Length: 209
Ligand code: ADP
Image 1 (cartoon, rainbow, N blue to C red):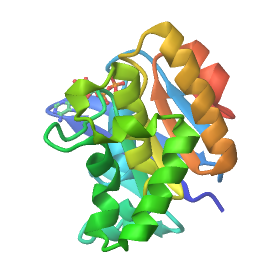
Image 2: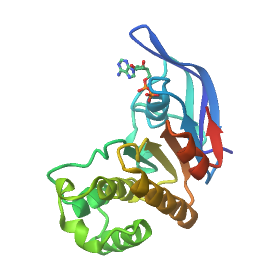
Image 3: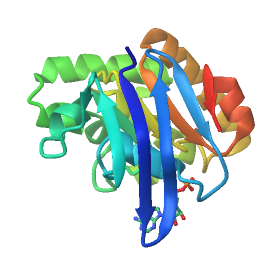
Image 4: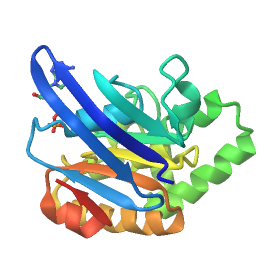
């Protein structure tokens, strides 16, 4: 069974129809790219998956059950989310940004440290960068930190909303390689929103256009 599916989802904003009876199943442990031009409803689709938006009609199912909009935190723990422009907290160091959710989940310090080490190595982030604040990091480094944060709790589902959009082409290629390596090491059910067909073809097992 697919860990994440949409059934006949429609969603409008003030008369603009962002999604019209969309049905999709995201296959387990593979990367699905959702590709299309700006404004076609890609981000809305991701936000529906983790309950940030509610559909006007239709149903979102995660882990075999319809989303419980009254109690989203248990779902969000199992669903990492990385957004364009990284969304890091500017007043927290990279280390604290990455480990924040685990701290809130009362993980032991040793477990946090071990997971940090795993992620830093997977992402090829220099450990010294962990003590810097987001504005002291390059765009590519910030994006890696955002990815590590999304993966901290070992989510089964990973939602990536144009995470590499603001990065220069060379760094982008490098990060794409790392994403593939990370996915091989920790296969999640990943949904990658992008408007870049080359990126989609490079990373995805399935394409949704
Ligand atoms: P994409 O991610 O493909 O660029 P979006 O999902 O962000 O597209 O947006 C799809 C459509 O819905 C656009 O027309 C956008 O302006 C509109 N939209 C998205 N979110 C909102 C919102 N919170 N309020 C009003 N309109 C919105």
